[in-house]
Amino acid sequence: MRTVVLVMAWFLLGGCSPGSTEDGATTPSTDGPLKVMSFAGELSADAPRSGGRWMETFSAVVLCTTEPIDVTSVVYSGPTSPISSFATLHWISEAKKRTPSTVISMRGAPDAEDPEWSELGGRFVRVSGDEIRMQPNCEDGRKVELLTTLDVSKRGADIDAVTVEYSSQDIEYQLEVPYHYVACGQNIADQARFCE
Image (cartoon, rainbow, N blue to C red):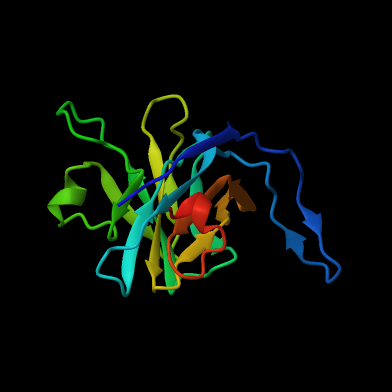
């Protein structure tokens, strides 16, 4: 498996307040307590040699919040859609044993019963529509990692927009995550950049 990381720029959140659409609906604010603490970038992973359907989990995204929040969903889009996609929040263990604590890219999906995943320590919670509470953690070192799992066919998947939807004190927010994920396959436009 080949993983490519290209660091592009430090992510800064823009300040804007909720607005209204033409039909009167309120659009969520992007200026909320949830922040991305990692660099912007992109990751790619080669398909398994066996071909067919496969799953890849990407990260390199660490989140922190300055206030209690409830994460409700993570929305993915891009030029080549996977069969499905989902997000998992990983509370990174601060265990003293010398094991990796974060994921850049790993085959499969987060599974606390799988030794390869359990070695990472911490707690995994899949974002599935129910509210997931995050307590303030920007100053105390309790990092939370956003994992993105793509279920992929031989077409591949290219996700260049990731949006975390959450609420705090009854206000809806969105956080744009500056990351681009590619699972290589036949329909990936820039093969030379991501898959060769």
